[in-house]
Length: 410
Image 1 (tube, rainbow, N blue to C red):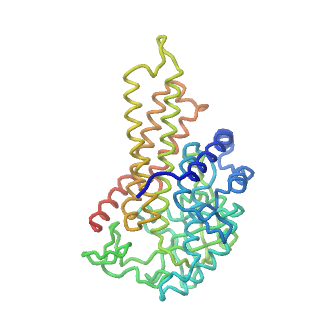
Image 2: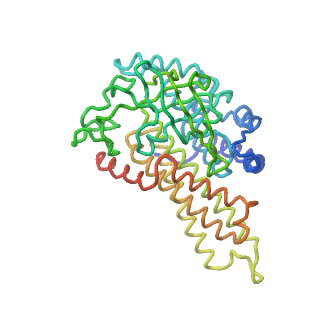
Image 3: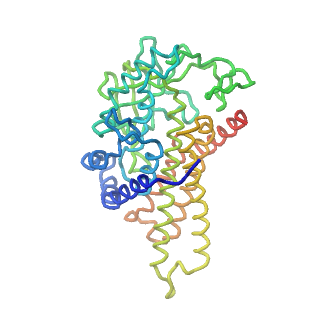
């Protein structure tokens, strides 16, 4: 395990940071003035000029052929700037489809589903790579330990509603977690087989998975859906965080393509990406707070010279460093060790989201009166932090997941 960034990765971070320094604040102001607004011109620059949308997409589909670590670097910088763009869900959707693009890697029983998944992936990946298409993951209920709000009927069509879809208001390609009626996932394996855990580890208690869910319930799997498919309706309820809309999507007999993929992989990638984003945002909260304390004076001295405030910032710095380390460990596990990712991903999301919320709350306090104003960005970070804490599983739920899975993998 090597956490040292290469020269190319450092250059990627620098280019992304410079772009966001120029465009981040105007985009945040626009999001406040027009909730749910989406600057497509800025998206085209982010994905076309910088080529960030296709980092994990193979070169044969027009991508960079990089990996999850490169996506994490960009997501961390985007988290620091709160840029209101659907990069995180779109990049993860592209990464998942890239993993499915090679249908030959599937087991024999899963070949038919893998072939259709590979065909669907090959059709979407070029557009996702150049930013002309936007992807999203619709699996919030599964990530929070609840039954899917969407089910698949015997005719291969989706019915139901799923909420909290990041980027769903502008997405062209959706990867949807849906319950199957027969307990069989697209790969051909029974999802209600006694003692089979998500990572293939045997469990002594029949029919119980590491997250505590009964495995004799209907199976859950991912399905691919195009935005222009019939029977699909999208609405955008008012969000807590104005810089990141969350869509409510309803399916009424919507045709879908079965993807030979495990919905848990999608959930773990979302947890990992949110952990990295939270670490980047928390670091930005501390940086802005320290800058304020250095320049604001009281009693003829900079606020930062008072020992009590120094201690609070030092404590935050230690917490944030632990969050950054945890987040990038989760990135490594997602890329190199899916077995570890089953435990590390929920742990990283829970820990990093908590650290982010603490950093955002402390930032408001340490900024004094200006930290409570609408004109300052501090409240935006607090709203993002609270929404991230609650999104895709609360910290308490995720820690229960960690405990159960860690016991099985021990």
